[in-house]
Length: 198
Image (cartoon, rainbow, N blue to C red):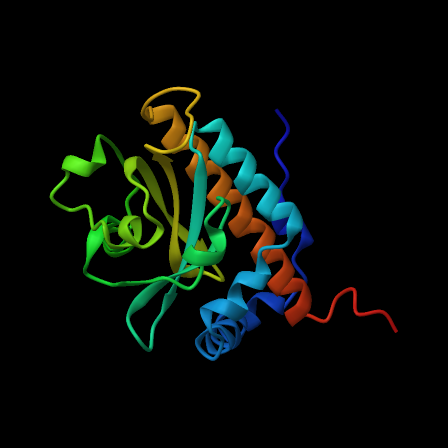
């Protein structure tokens, strides 16, 4: 396996601008709503996520982004049949498993989730379905924690198999990491004015 030494790509003195780059990105993120930020996940990145949801054995997945003003996680993308009803749903931070994953910044996997004391079934009731298993992983980009990506199995949907395995958590975490890199590349390219044409 070859190793790329990216330090060779750094321009002399450019590293001194790193704190300012991070501040600029954080200011932009803070002034953007979750509905605006979801557009950073382009069609290619969405394809990666959909493939990961399927590979993990889930019937659908959701991208939750934090709204710092309201202290809620907002469902900004869903790959399932009820996406129109689900997108825009707000989960208060401090309530439910999604919020726990956000707060603890640790992946979570549970089968037979309906019996879990931490499971908040508000969303299930909204779409009249029953979550039976869930994976949730923290979602980072722009050098910070920005939300959670979850993948579920529903009682009403046909499954290739019942429940999730630890390898499925790794599949979803790997996809979240790849999407983070794609978003960071897009943001840094834009911030530096690369590819603007002229």
